[in-house]
Structure formats: C-alpha cells, structure tokens
Image 1 (cartoon, rainbow, N blue to C red):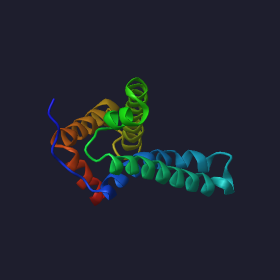
Image 2 (image 1 turned 120 degrees about the vertical axis):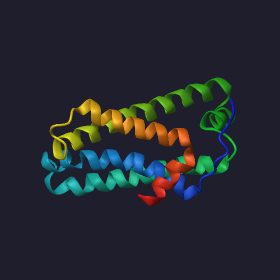
Image 3 (image 1 turned 90 degrees about the horizontal axis):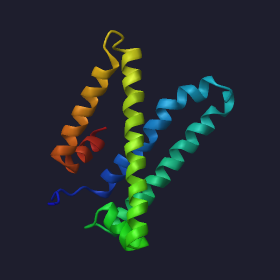
Image 4 (image 1 turned 180 degrees about the vertical axis):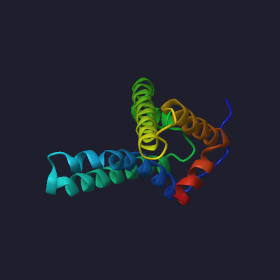
Length: 149
C-alpha cells in the first residue's frame, strides 16, 4: 500500500478537526436555543467551541509529534500493538459515524431550507461524491479547502 506524499500544515489540521467538531454544534444550536435552555443557550455554544478546540489541539499535537506516521501507527507506538489497533478502530468508527451524521444533517438542512423539491438522497449523494473526490485527490485538497473556509 503506497502512501500519499502530501503534507499539510499544523494549522490546516487544526482547522479540519475544529470544523468537524464545530459543525455538529452549529447544526444543533437552534435545537438548544429553542428548547428549555433559554438564557443558558450561549453557554452550550461556548462549551462546544472550547471542547472542540481542545480535541483538535490534542489530535493536532499527536499529529505533530508523530509526523511520518498514520493515526493507527502512532496509536500502536503509544499503546502497544493490540490496544493501539483497538483504539484506532474505535477512533476511525467514531469519525465515520460523525461523517454520516453530518451528511444527513446538512442534507436535511439543504432540502428543508433551500431545495424543498429535491429528494434527500440526491443531495446526500452529491455531497458524498464531492467529498469522495476531494479525499481521492488527497489530504492537501481538503486542507486547502479548510484554509479557504
């Protein structure tokens, strides 16, 4: 299996990870503000932003400490072969789950707010195809998009 030769800056990794976590908070913030939170809704948003930044800094720090290794490889270096692979599998499963939830949420937002006559499966399919193409082109494309956003 060959590795991609692309490199991204630490700030780009931070932006990617932060956007992944903050998107969930932004998507669900209207639910929090419309519910029983009332004047405490700002605190929920603040906790989400701070928590997302801490997670992104932790993961980015590990990426900087092990620059030539994948998540699975430095998981094994830190935790041992079996435990490292098990934790990496959980880690990758969580990211897959977050991606699936994000695609569904943003598909629903687009259909409800902007494209009411468009089938949800069509909107989701286009988002998945565009994301897959960016992933196929490499991590640098995604990192440049994170810089732009």
